[in-house]
Length: 533
Image: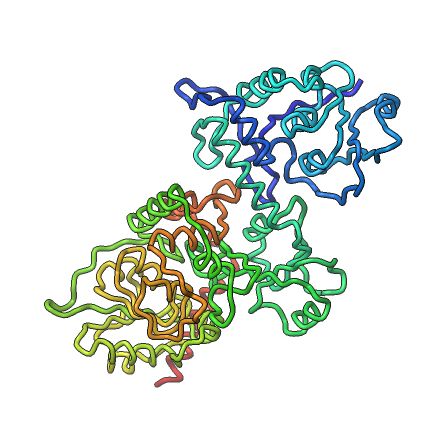
């Protein structure tokens, strides 16, 4: 007798490293009731294609009509085969929706959830034997609604995996849809190059497509398809070999809300961006982010969510490398305060920005020229300040132009203090926009050219659209990046990561690699200081 394991119909994909495996839990009094129309729920399931192992493999399918067969008894399967159609035998580990929606007919044991998926998809169904889905083979609307009510709506209490709170079935479905979209977006990625070993545990779930992604260094064993690259860490020889093979290169970089520590300290990213056109900081070519801002349509619900996310970030003091808030006093009464954040001078975001700025000191001098009477505060980039990267300016040189050099204050608090921010391409300019501060760009960051900044750099003519702040936030923080929850290990919406970082639940930073990198940074700073004496 074939015994079918009764799993919840809505399931969490087994993302690598995830520490939460289920969407279901015990019913609780006062939990989220299921107040919805079953017919609407079925339509949503059909559209989202969730239920069962929806993250499974998607094999090539027959070109001619086929009957999908998944039954324990081979003789019973043969009885449903047709001379006119191909017969596709079920293969374990397959995405059921992928093979069902193209089928002319599905033949399955009556107790198998594949029968429910076929009925939801509207594919003709034949069930074999007796089981909980026997009545679905008649194709009746009432039988389907009864089965969905019994097996999806009322079979389980659904829990938000990030908070543990009970939620309704539609919320659980949408979360499965969120995960499915992520998995589907990764299905063509065959390998990943240039990813340091300490980044891989948090990057792997965000690039996962149902099976482990090969992190490679040798091009030879790589199968055809797209490859994900961390370009600055991929050797020129590998890049040349990939391009000669015609591989589609997908650039991956840190996200804009990254972690509670520095990448230069080997703290792994909790957010990445994945760009198939280019990369957002290279203004010489289009990127997926630029395309979103130029051509995207932003619905009211998305803009409302963007506004709430922006308010959450501002209230919590969250920035790219963590969170922190402080009430800083104004330095001088009666003078406009201008903040100038430095950058890593050899970073790709600086070198590829089409900026006329030649370095941090040049940026500072340009800001002084634009604001001759202002009280200028200069803050070095955290990676430079930690001693890991290029871009340090001797304090004596800085103070010939700036009025003050700050080191340890949170960038969010400095932005709150400032009346205006001058940047080359720094993300601090975007964080200042979140706080409704005037921003002058001297280079061409991704947020320049949309009508929200005063732009002195050569903004490309491609950027013609004018965007509101909430539209910018929707594209930059909601639609473009991917986020990982450090508590559950699951890909998550940005609101979850912002909450975690604000609560201090970011990436673990006490490992040996992190400690070694911080020690290296301190010694490099000391050596640099000796050399400048």
